[in-house]
Image 1 (cartoon, rainbow, N blue to C red):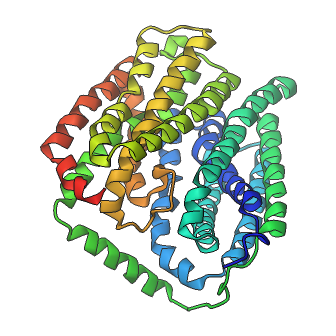
Image 2 (cartoon, rainbow, N blue to C red; image 1 turned 120 degrees about the vertical axis):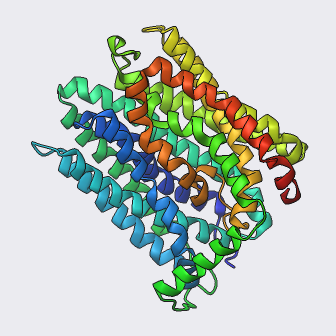
Length: 426
């Protein structure tokens, strides 16, 4: 273990978290806007966006191999260098005369693979460098650093992209400049990590493991999970609790950008960046922090229904905006977005009750529950189909359907007796 005085976590944790979140924000949020503006319709944009989450599901099968290889610092530097090259590759490609949505998707998918690998390496490095008590001390620092990087990437830079579009009178040049700025910002944190990160004790003690052995290890874990009693009712309950959020994850952006005659609000890219990327991310962070604070005061079994109910309330905001649109009312848009994302962040704390049961504490250091491989896998199908469903129903009926999923989720959780099953895993 590296001496704390020689290796100040107050310096390397923010730098490492920022390097983790900047490309991840491009994959999870910015990519959707890019795909839409470069010719993908809502159905294909939602489908492509869902596929970009696949690396976070499959990265579990590399967990034991990466952990045993142990060369976290070296691999982090290699991965961050590849991430920078991929970000620059996207900037160069979209500056060309013609951009195909599926080729852009391939670039983004490679970026997503690298992000998942980097996230895994970062978590393992963090847990190796700090004792458990130190990890608790720096939890808020890590969360704050991640969310600030997310606000800057998804919020501020999207607003800047809108201004570039007006200045250059070309969305292609605007996104090329935007991608170059993201790559440049990431390069700064790459350089900081080269200077600040130190090698953990025993990092070079490499234990070779073939990929087939790694997959066998992970399949053995999954088989143990499947043998647990009541695992299917638990997964079924969690699927319905996450269903409204999975359906709205992409379609809320479609709704904001769509013209009023199409049932949307006709917002600009700057409006989306400010409402979703700045106000929304801040509200999401406050929700997570507030939920965690209450869970320290009350037991998880006491908080189960509160978090489950709040998680499913956010569709009400978008249903109200769809049924009673307030065009050009930025204050109302920000208030509704704040409420929706606050509920989303607060309610996601319910996953902290499910995850220990499902994943056997394998991902206990992960603070953003959306990254849990099994949780994300429950959201993939609704994510992929959400664009088609919103076009088929129309936005008013679609958000009403999302709101109606809430009581269904509560009934399913009661039928599955989720609280009684999960209570022993507090």
